[in-house]
Picture 1: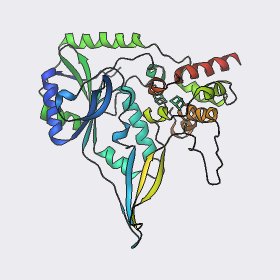
Picture 2 (picture 1 turned 90 degrees about the vertical axis):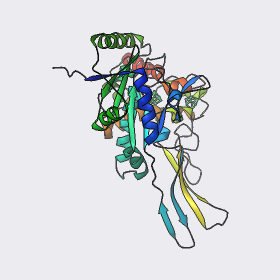
Picture 3 (picture 1 turned 90 degrees about the horizontal axis):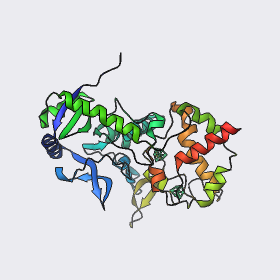
Picture 4 (picture 1 turned 120 degrees about the horizontal axis):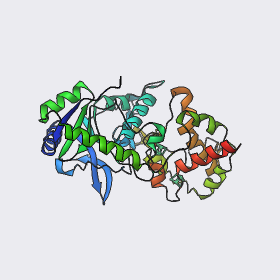
Length: 346
Ligand code: SF4
Ligand code: SF4
């Protein structure tokens, strides 16, 4: 029998009291409006939070895996080194289903092998509140089955007229709701409205993949020699935006920065990206992926092929951010469909 989600009804004014309550105890990072666009940022008052249904250009990745972070401080005079593992209690507010799926993948990556204490400590201190969304022309999560979630959040809000239907995903979420907001049982009209909204959303997907997700690793495995790579490599500027905006790109570089005393310093990690020219450059100047075509092929394979052996999952959640932010309009769904067609032809 299909599991029926249990909802609470949260009127608009109760959402404000929830946010205000959270602001007293946590750093709240949520969907805001920046230069007229939906963005993700720190919220200091309830009215700054704009629970948008449009995808944000950047994901919330930076609040768990900052673009630059200090890993340890050292003193070369004494050989002392002190790890820096810090976390503020925070709430990520307004994550869409694909972003919650991406978070689950990041959790697996950073716990795999040698667990990453910095990410995991921050994650432990993070509450996730999801919100529903409406796809634009770049979203293709529906084709990957990442358009909905039933776990990975503490609360999840569905917009209905005058309020929200709230799904409770954890005891922590239930306690927050009880502490900060007055909810009531939802009426039949609100539940009906949710069904209609879900149907509108389903019909709104324009970008689609022409193969099932489980077929993609094999299709990519047969596409190393495709002419697609040369064609998109010729227009790619190697800017790295696609890596930066992607909620599942997690590569980083680590450097020691020594202060003016030449004795004390910090070990710092910063985001890196496989589309950047120096990413695969090693000592002696050899570059394992010299061309932009090779670098793009590598990036796409990381999303649809290489990691699936270890994690039994694709590493793209179909958020469309890389396509949305690419100045030369390289679109990951279109490229994948081109490879699907080539393979069907072969
Ligand atoms: S955003 Fe576009 S141009 Fe920039 S590296 Fe990625 S694919 Fe190339
Ligand atoms: S590869 Fe592109 S579409 Fe896939 S998760 Fe990353 S940014 Fe989103």
